[in-house]
Image (cartoon, rainbow, N blue to C red; front, top):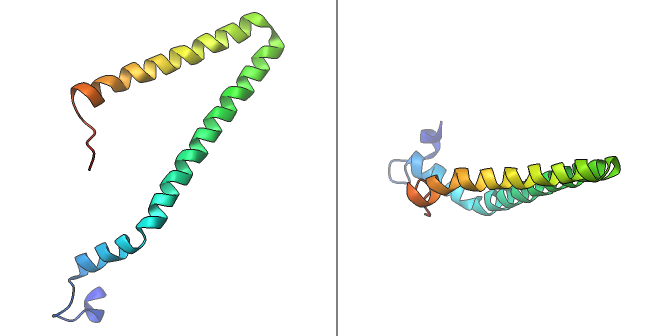
Amino acid sequence: MVEKFVSDKTIPPDLLFASFIHSFSFVFYFLQVLISVSAFCVVTYTKVAISSLMREEGRKPLLWCGISTQLGSFLGAVSIFAPVNVYHMFKEH
């Protein structure tokens, strides 16, 4: 369908699509930031809500909630260390 609107002397369809995407790059960056901030807020709210419920139960459940939170953070950091720093799986472009 794009070929009908593009003559032989103009931009090829694949470059036309790339220029279309490039013109909306600000929207994509904004959506990426919005989704990241929203996910952070949901995770933080969930952790605070669970901690508040554990606080009402007493000292020992709140202690185990803190231990499990710290253990989860530790396991996440350890599991991502090798792919990032040893195998260089993620590259900056």
